Image 1 (cartoon, helix red, strand yellow):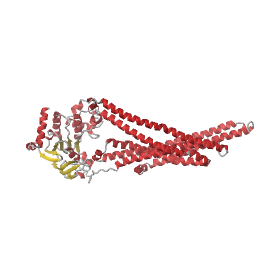
Image 2 (cartoon, one colour; image 1 turned 45 degrees about the horizontal axis):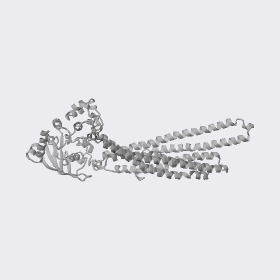
Image 3 (cartoon, rainbow, N blue to C red; image 1 turned 60 degrees about the horizontal axis):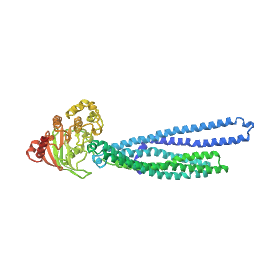
Length: 594
């Protein structure tokens, strides 16, 4: 249970709801216990009244007997109805306090987890898969909520109701109490073990359901590939296998559930039979009344659910503790990327890399080796290299998605670690190599949730990225809703939308990470001509494997296996007859063939 201590701060936050819920439960159970006594009074009243009636039958005392009996029964019936209504009202208040509290804590906990996810570094997401992260914020939090809501509510109910009922039963007859309660511990233990089996099989079903969902998602996402390679039959067979596994596990759970309720009813029935048998013997001996037997049967039924819930609550608590442990593992994760001074300052764009080395912490890949270069504010630099040369790593370090293993990165003569991270990133425009667009309108994807950006700026950014004419031809224009990951658009359109999203912020530093890889040569030239004017007055870093993208830059560096092997201008590098010229000539030949 120590893992659940993390939730104590939330229980303290909503302590008023918890305290009120406890009070309402006590009052509700008080009104739940009383009807059993009223039933006893009613049965004893009727039996005693008929006994007296037989003694005085035909005499003056028997006149109006049935009217008086009816009145008495009606009064007792009215009292029982009132008690039931009061109990129901307070049970409603219990759920409006304890269950509402659990929902509020669920909301707070999900926000806490999501905020933690947002604060964690990129390396965290490279170590953990998306499905696992999703399960922690959905399935695991739901299990924790069951402990905070039904778990606490029924636990308190058990602690309150049990002493009240046992006290009332012992007041009447200790021996009958013993026999009436005899099967209930067996019931609780049985339910505990059966619940464990149900939970394990339910988890297996969840695994199968997850696999089934993943299979369907992959099939839908890759439907073009499936059809192109004529693999529909294979996809159907794979789905059938997963579906068969899900069906088999579901039937196993159904079998256990089929045994579950008969077991409960059998043990409850045994308790009632013992109550009536032992109680009947005591009535014959004159130790108790008929009303006492009815009272005890009601008490036994009242205790059935709390005792049944004991095993269920234990199971809920175990599952919640396991889930909270998984949640705590992520909540304890720390972000090593922190600001030293939290400096919130507008930047000009002077950029200096000095002897920067970087090794990816999760894979151990040595991505950059002693990299040094300098870019003045308003200038541009192109970083050219083959796949795996370390180009994108430079962009990650500039954005402080990672920190350099050694060396320093300075912006405006200040170490990048001194700046407030959010303030620094807000002054950079970034076009990633792996384009990601949200399921929203094209306009909102360009503005990216910033309500301060006007439509005019969005349209101008789209024109600069050579996107405006394409979008204008759509029936709904910039209000066109994109599918998942921007599937509505072509590869080139997605890339140009990403460029528009970066430049609409009017950044002081613009980072283009292979931003033109998905466009043809003509579109590339159009965008580059537009970028020439956009790049004026701002520091621009063009990362590309295409030499044509580097022509606009004031300076070019060539990377190979994380090291700078050449640097200079386009003309000086061509004159060196080195790697840059070799790449230039190869790409020129490819363009001529195309």
